[in-house]
Image (cartoon, rainbow, N blue to C red; front, side, top):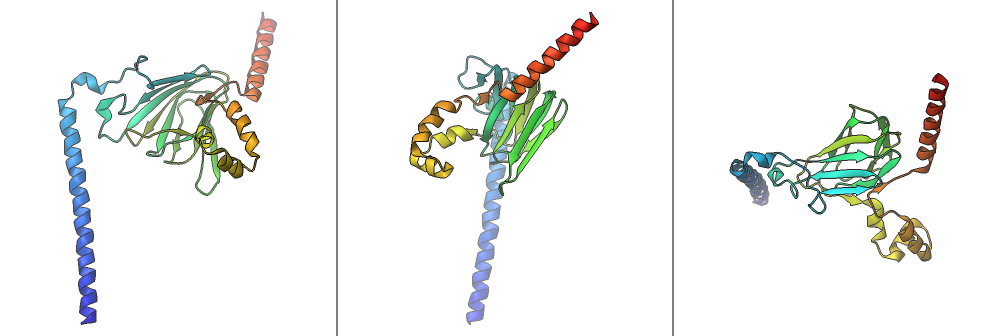
Length: 233
């Protein structure tokens, strides 16, 4: 009898699992049908995105760089499609601060770049770093800290496409500074009094320009190039 009872419980569990799978599938299908219906109700112009400088948060600037967000917040036609995009122009010697996208992986395409450094940190603490140029792509796994740094001496232009209409963005340094001072100090192994200094030194913008060694190298390259031109003349 006990054996029969165990068998019955196992059957009930299996039925519950199957029912849950069917429910999730039906819900997903309903959501898909709803998204399709919404698409049909949109005018043709809704499927084309034109950056709007008048919309708060849609375009971010700093350090002679700019990003334009193409998410469902600013482009409603993306709602329910599970995709979005951002477009960037990163000035020479400028870093896009380490950050995470908690809801999506991203794939970057370099439309124009001489030396764009890209990388992320794996869950086990190892880092993956590469330098790419025009025509190359790079991937940033969901939830992992990653960055882009234009170590070239000309502008880098690129797009990043995401697997969510609202990927979310959290800048790591700014998030850390939002922690209680004693928690941050203990985590970094510094005195609490040093936290105040960090707050004054960490940039508030997602773009950090004029990275010193890069600026010096580009200045040297420019000087050498000008000298060569004078010799040719």
